[in-house]
Image 1 (cartoon, rainbow, N blue to C red):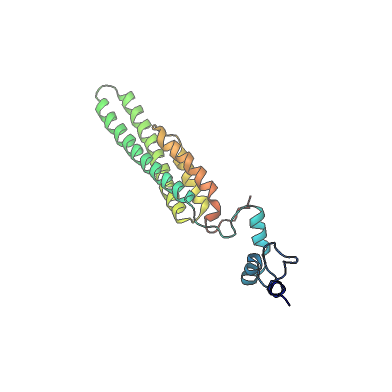
Image 2 (cartoon, rainbow, N blue to C red):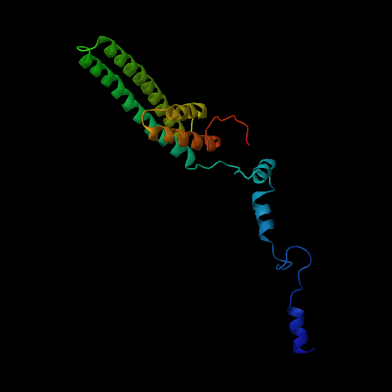
Length: 181
């Protein structure tokens, strides 16, 4: 037997079936994964087909939505307190000149200020729940309360962004029983 024939005998045969580029004695990466992790479950397959992660990892969306709701709520709270105290102060100052205008200013200031105070408190509580990822309904209510129009436009824009972020991250909340889309 010649040396060339001996070298030819030592070579392994080309792969038959399986993945290209693997030798018959080697196990492919997919087979290793299947042996280690087991077959794919229905839930994993559904998650892959729906393009959603099987385990919902924590993303930035609920945290950002919660922070925006808290900032907007605090802003509305301060504006509401200013409206209540400002309306009361102005009504006392104008009372010497015109009683009817004084009562109207006090009514508007106290009414609008009280509404902004209540909405600010709801927004702060809802933002806190959004950061903790608990009670999605309360987090959404806080975001909606943060989006109510106030004399300043920025808190309203932050509230709208908060609604968007909390809605996009609703699957990260514990106790969420909404249907998956």
